[in-house]
Image (cartoon, rainbow, N blue to C red; front, side):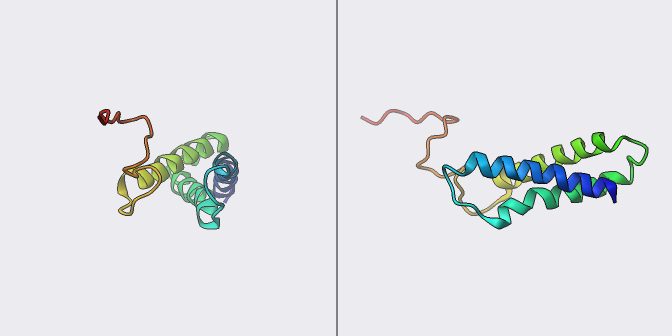
Length: 101
């Protein structure tokens, strides 16, 4: 239970920082805000079984890392609908477009 609570708290920190960072460009959404704490708690729960003898901080950091990997994998690769990350008109700097003449 301590692992899950710690994972939730670390996910809450990630959500607060993400909401603060993105507040200039997109509106606040409760579903997106609580995604990180819930996934942090989930990964801490999963990791609590094989890592029972590990320090809580180490398991929480691993859960936070797995939360970031799973969220970014979902947003960048697995989601079918267009998002702000793969919009064709948005120049993110990853792909340079040929100059139009």
